[in-house]
Each structure stands twice: as structure tokens, then as C-alpha cells.
Amino acid sequence: MKTLTLLLALVFSGSVIAQNGTNANGMAKPTVDQLGNGLIKITKYHDNGMVAETGFFLNGEKHGVWTAFDENGNKSMEANWNNGTKEGNWTVWHNNGTLHYLMVYENGKRLLSTEWDPNGTLIAGNQSK
Image 1 (spheres, rainbow, N blue to C red):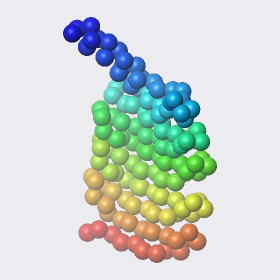
Image 2 (image 1 turned 90 degrees about the horizontal axis):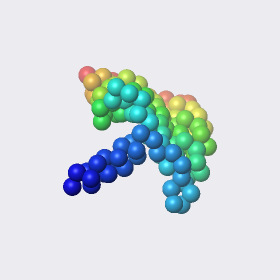
Image 3 (image 1 turned 135 degrees about the vertical axis):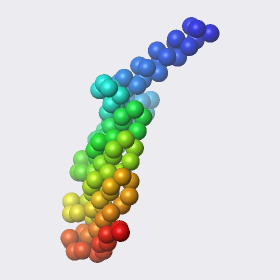
């Protein structure tokens, strides 16, 4: 039993420290890098190998900046987390690169939400009270 536990610990710890390369279908595997002090960087990939998303976990919770990209490598979203809680600016872009949404969070509560059309015209905006 101790041998099995040790073997499982070694297998899973290796998969947490770094997962680079490709899966059986030839697609890029997510990479998981331990940066120390409980901070882990995750990078996920589109089927074409381009980065789809990057972000961090701190002690198992989303933390810091998370960024998503479309299949062409253009930034499509950027979100901020503080120990698993939405915090600060959350920004989403249209496919043409213009701003689509801007949301502002404080301690997980949305304070502001603004939306624009693909031409940059303001559609809606509101502030929470």
C-alpha cells in the first residue's frame, strides 16, 4: 500500500510540475508550472497549437491576471482575480480588436458594466449601487 501511495504521488506530482508536449491526437497539452509559494501558472492551447488561455492559481484559487486568446493569437479577454474572487477590470474584445465589454469588480461584486458594438459605439453601461 505504501508503494502504491508513493507511486501515485510521484505520477501526480510530475504532472503538476510540468505538462509539456502533445497528447495522443498530436494536440498541445496544457502546461502547468509551479512557480513557488503556492503559485501555479497554467497555459492552455487551441487545437492549432496557439495559446488559448494563461492564468495563475494561488493555493488552489484563481489569482492574478487570466488572459484568453482567439485561435489567431489575438487577446479576447483579460480578467483579474484575488484568491478566487473577481477583482478589478474584466475586459472582453470583439474579434476585430475593438472593446466589447468592460466590467469592474470589487470583492467579487460587479460595480460597473459597459458594452460597445464592434464599431466602438456604446450600447449600454451601468453602475451597481
